[in-house]
Image 1 (cartoon, rainbow, N blue to C red):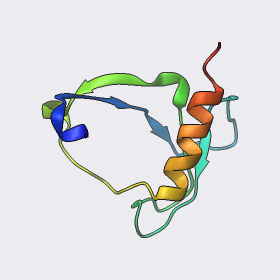
Image 2 (cartoon, helix red, strand yellow):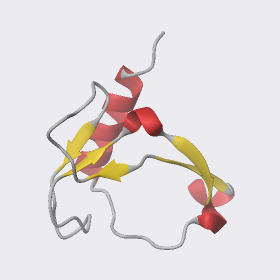
Image 3 (cartoon, rainbow, N blue to C red):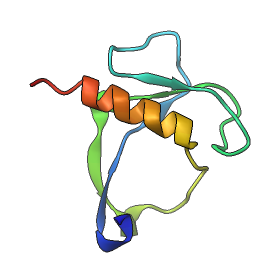
Image 4 (tube, rainbow, N blue to C red):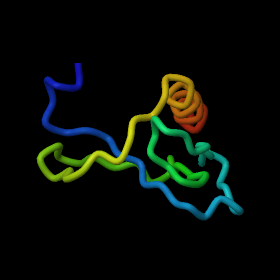
Length: 79
C-alpha cells in the first residue's frame, strides 16, 4: 500500500511526443488523466520523491495506461 511509504517514484512527462526513446511511453489525453494533448512518460528519468514535496495532483492514470507503464518499465530493466 503506497500510503505506508513517505517516498514514491515519479517519472516526468513531456508534451514533445515526436521523439520517443525506447522506454518512453505515449499516453493519450482523456478526462481521467487530465491531459489536454498526448504526453510522453520519460521512464528513463524515474527518480524518488518525498510525498510531502508533491504539491498538486493533475490527474489519474487509467488502469490500462498503468499496465502499459509497468510493462514498459519492466521491459527496460536489464537482467
